[in-house]
Image (cartoon, rainbow, N blue to C red; front, side):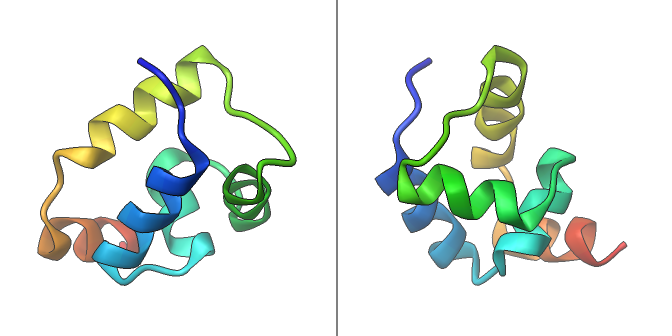
Length: 68
């Protein structure tokens, strides 16, 4: 899979999550999500797989998991 900073930011906005909450779903910090969205760093292969798994979550499930 390819990583796109723009698609990451759009998906996070679609879910209505902060960078910190989205990062919690991936298992990383919100600052890292911000850096990825800005194109200042890129996720490694394992992190890309986590991002792919999150793409299939509904907004409700993502909100539940990020607040747990």
